[in-house]
Image (tube, rainbow, N blue to C red; front, side):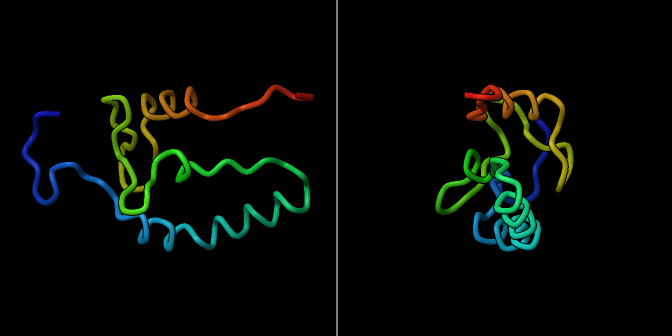
Length: 88
């Protein structure tokens, strides 16, 4: 965004730390998935590789703060999700 940055310039998130932090929530969601048959879609599958999780996608900042997606980031991610229509 052209502003001064202290620390890593790309703002990437360490995958290992991100998944460790999210582990309790992911475990709960996996339990709901198993009980209900709902499809769980993890954003980490779209955003993370073996080393880092992206904070920008297609030039759009994904987060507005440490734990919340930005509105433009949400729109970019929604367009990339492998969603299926009901009954398909």
